[in-house]
Length: 189
Image 1 (spheres, helix red, strand yellow):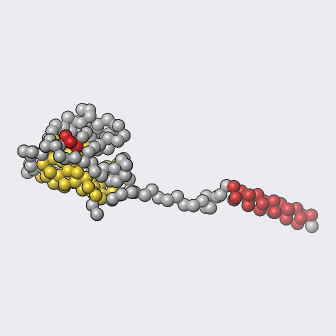
Image 2: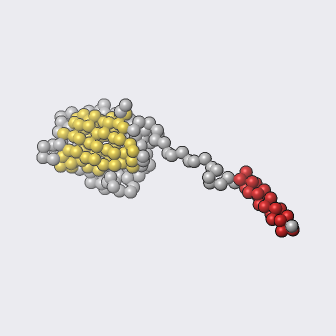
Image 3: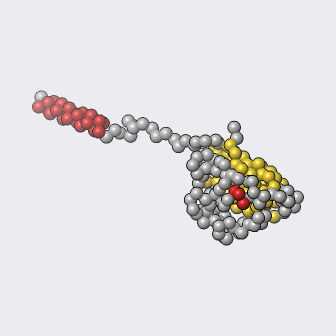
């Protein structure tokens, strides 16, 4: 009988301790599930590229958001054969004849200029796009460290194609020369 009374008292004490623990420190099962990160804003956008004065470069650059990555697909024509610097610039303004109204490279993190694959680079550094012997160029790449919408997103910025290849070293522009095509990144519905 003493063992039964002792077991009952111990059981009551343990249940009381468990109840107290549940009230002050919920178990992981009792905590609400964390919500997945939400992407705000549009999931796709495009830039219609127009040529600078005395240039022929035109085309389309499409952006599609998937998680924390942006797929970039570019199709251009009217380029001189070879590589051309290809960047997102900070202002969505293609009004100046030489497209200087688009400002510098989009760089909200104040990083150094570098190649697209470098761990430390401008968000807008997309490397070079290379035209074939007929002046046509296609490029597919993935951007990280930004989104289409949001405070530091690419929406409303400009895509610029440069006259020369980006050397990935010269600060802050890669010594890519003049701006030969410009397009403002706009949301797709």
